[in-house]
Amino acid sequence: MSTARAEILARTRAALGAPTTGQTGPAGPVGPVTAAGELPRGYLAADDPWETGLPRPELLALLERRVVDYRATFTVASAADLPAVVARLLDGAARVVVPAGLDPTWLTRAEDAGAVVLVDDAPGLSVAELDAADAVVTASRLAIAETGTIVLDAAPDQGRRAISLLPDHHVCVVRADAVVRGLPAAIGRLATTRPMTWISGPSATSDIELSRVDGVHGPRRLDVVLLQEQ
Image (tube, one colour):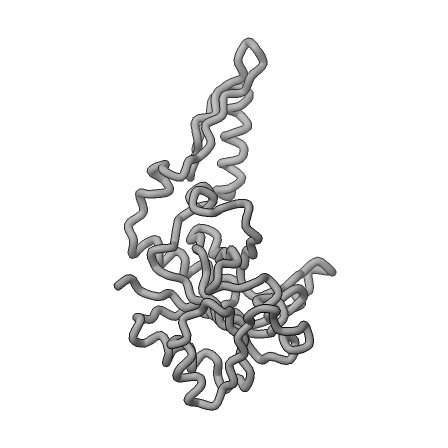
């Protein structure tokens, strides 16, 4: 029996007041239904030991495994190495879109190699300009290690949603101190009133006959760069 299935069944039994066996994972204390018909709920919180207890190296290694599982690449870089890493990942892209608030030093080596950097400043690049670009480089708000998901919240160094959806190649920089383990910790850090883009691997779908089709609603290539803490 899979771990997920066992966990679901254990929680169902707990909710029904039956004995539980083999419960694993981030299980909150879900108790039996009370006499008043209320179901006590112990949802995982951002400060739960499951969220905060994983050693930092293991947390970052977990994120790397999940990102690679999604067929994206994962590169670790220091601040000094980042311009060279970005240039290598852009791999000769001629036209590269960046949000207006991105650190311009990240693109210096790519520009030296001949890339034209298009800054998406007000009023913003047109759809045709974004579609004609070879790649986009952005920062990110945070990453969720357990699911390999990266979240952009439209901050100045991430830009509006369109710039990370139209170019076919996305180089996304994640700061190591912005990696959390699970969804509760992520939600605790996010301002949910902001427009957000959640990215789990390159765009793809297997909706039709389980045949994978890449690039359905976004870039077909995703390169994640983990920027090491200073």
